[in-house]
Length: 548
Image (cartoon, rainbow, N blue to C red; front, side):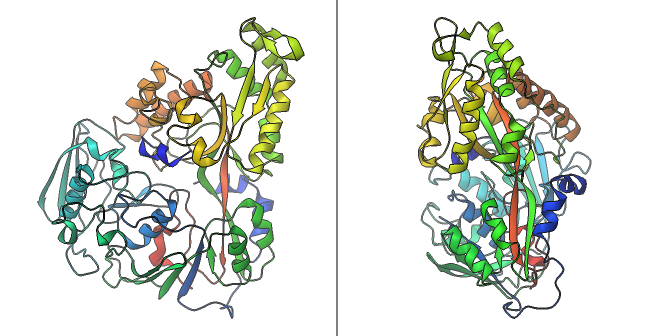
């Protein structure tokens, strides 16, 4: 949805069989250069050139709000845990992920023990210990620092460091979200910061470190040429050993057309995210590999359940059944994406089993009749006091309007008048904009999940704006109770059962209709090896393994 939504409890790739089901023919067409042997004349051995449309706003993740920062920070910082391509934790600064079984999580779920990896250092040679993580917690919670979010960190009431190999974290209440604070990027996930450099500063807001950080990860930032590029060299002190590549150049190219052109001419070697409208231009480029993969982005129709008429679940269900969602996915969105039935990815350990809404305009009309809405002037249904006239809002993109027109035509056939009223993204998702203020009827956009399935911030009655991102304004006690219970245990079996019940309740009450999970496309020189696009947050999760 918006960056603001990431400040509240966040939500959260496909099995091989499911990936094949996304479209075998399409994969074959796009991936026809895979397996080309030998080094191409344009390949610079050991040196990787990555293209990006955006530049970081800050390299200290406590203060940064952009995806570009997440990408760069994955190169230069070592988090407590990283995420693998499917969103599962991988130990980084610790030797194991804490669980009930290994004693890392207490039976009452209120104490977390982190077993620290010995011998880890910062790039300047100083030891990197749990004391740095404790310092980070204190920095996040300090009123002197303008941290973008304290979510999760503010559930920690005490942080003990009995020795350099152990951190003991005490929670005021069980909260599975806290583990995400120590993960690799996104939302309020921050890696340990160096206490030996920052500990004596009055605050961190303007620290030189924020643009010239030392490294704990596989790469050293050697130059930030603002507006042009960032340059990286191997970190010889990285605990895994230096990465295989000799250098990475992260080129800042704002124009998507120019990025694709530079990939075609081999001025860059890797474009991690290619818009589907550009993928066709790359399929026949010699020496280029184009790889589709599932991403944690989902498109949906949000319904403001607090609005007149829309507060009747029968009207919301009629809207869901009047529209041909399969047709929309196949035409407007070219059939590239995987149909969605919930906001938990289909390959997640918490993925629920939820039916799709049938396309049944006749059933939709019967629902509207039962709700007391009869055809009136101009064919628009009314119950005598309220007519079924709604607005739909999205960002100003051509694809959005095509989808909105399809919805407009489908609903008109059932007596619902839909007016399109789109906005710039900066206005639609602003804290005082139509979405978070509730001044909208229907809204069409893409939301993004974190690796954990927690979706409390989106659907709980406790997180109605301005207290959260529940912009459907649905206040359902059962959803509120289930979504809260699901984060009060670290037991995945219990959490999965709770999410099944919660998602079924969302399906019944229809504050949203899910359309698809986005299928992202990465394109790169087929001399690049070890690159594995990820579903969540960053494709740079294993950059030490890359070679070219």
